[in-house]
Image (cartoon, rainbow, N blue to C red; front, side, top):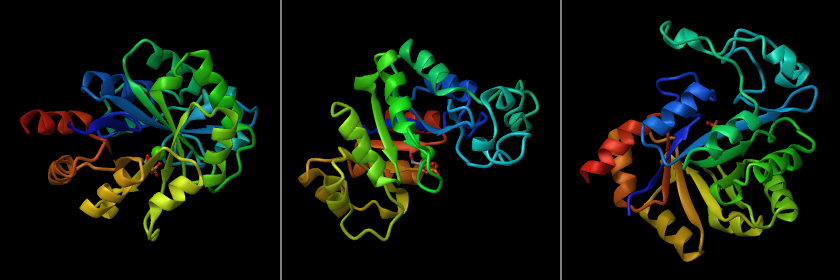
Length: 242
Ligand code: G3P
Ligand code: CA
């Protein structure tokens, strides 16, 4: 079995990250799923954006949480990547759910609630997942492990993925302690023994963020369950050749 391919922030190597054009491109580029980041606006709407600050990905400044959705809608997102791209806007999580519902895509939803508290983000995300009947196509991930536990308490049927950045000697134990179904490991941490231990403990293993061909091939050989990449088409072509 080849690993599942998840487009990291959409097909973000070619399109502005975490936007509908990037998610639509993921589908055209044969991704099995999309990965995206969610956080709350000042008026408690769930929006799709990676950084807590607007400055890198948009033409705005300041914290996402200090702006209403109406204010955020005025901002342009990342068309400076390629001037032929039309300017686009920050999508709401509901818009992405509505898009995914009409596709076969899976969805990895990362709660951005590790550095800044996002009260009730879990409840709002779960409500939208249920509204669009995406329960069986979604994994909720976070670096905030209490939040993952909270997701399980709110909706035991939803899968969760424990994100980590290294320096965890036995990450599978952490995943089990916080009732996660999956481990999402950074590329440099993935070894044959991590794959083996993860499997032995009944967990699914995804790796991020795998953009190089050599890395893609190595992880496919190790039989990892999924890779998260900015270049889904590149991964698809590699895996088709194997
Ligand atoms: O899903 C893994 C990856 O997205 C976590 O890192 O910073 O890209 O959100 P980051
Ligand atoms: Ca992410």
